[in-house]
Image 1 (tube, rainbow, N blue to C red):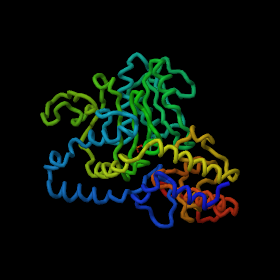
Image 2 (cartoon, protein in one colour):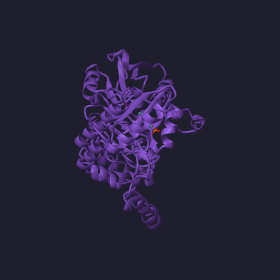
Image 3 (cartoon, rainbow, N blue to C red):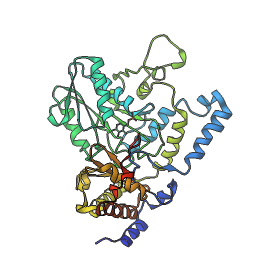
Image 4 (cartoon, protein in one colour):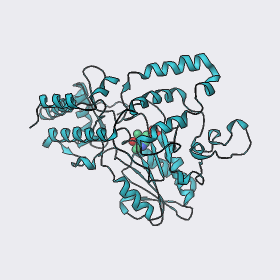
Length: 398
Ligand SMILES: *Cc1c(COP(=O)(O)O)cnc(C)c1O
């Protein structure tokens, strides 16, 4: 049976152990919320400082050409592509995940004009749902159907998250993609909770969207990305037909003419400063073997599940193959339990109605962190430390 010393030994042998030193992690905190906001890479402040002082301060408007700002949506897209199984010229960075969902699903329904059904998972992250609801309302005449019904033969598009943000359940991406496409529908994946933690491969799908501030560590408010399979580059329509998706934005023509390739999915002026922090974060990702990342994520998740044992009801799949990189449990008083943990240096989070979540970021979470966090959690439950009334109050962001 495992003890704390054995965890220290596993950390010493961990092939990814050297990455942890590349992040700023506050003393005395076990950070298990990297699935919500990733940690700060040590070299990011210098890269952002350069973008502000040297590029903006020194070059002023010349930065658009000289510092490569104009092409950032594509150059960054090419750097993200290997993390999702995509190739160069297939991913564009910008906007937010919600906007990318709107672009992907709008494009998909136009590619299947004879079909009037959009399939999603009622358990999907709410913004994905909200965006589909708004789109269906704007278009008129569309039905939104739950994925669990399992019928795609009249569907235009199926939008799913690879990993469930609450339970961490992972879809079998190749199998689902094949089933959906065989039924003549298009497949769009949201990889927000998988990119940077799993061996993601959306190359068989039609569209994919994801964010960069979770496991990719690009910082609060960093832009999202959109993957479009090359088979759709010529025909797919970007309904958000802003000037940066135009064939010649600086011709200032009156009519919209889409650019060739993935650039047609750009919308407007890139967020240069948060793209600088994404650029810095991606320096680390160039060196990460994704098979080792996934193996460590599964090992740490299973360790957490084993150590918590019967103290809580598991909300995630027990089988690591079917789980993403966070582990969730049910507790009717989950919110004060999480507050009590935070007070003891263990940061997890709570998702309504009753889910405690612990995100494992394999680049900086250690075996010993999982050991200490699980033991603190069991102690908070055994001694009912969460019942202290200080832990009942809720801030705006949970
Ligand atoms: C985090 C997350 C989002 C975030 O959407 P934004 O538009 O970037 O705020 C969307 N979908 C899923 C599945 C997420 O996990």
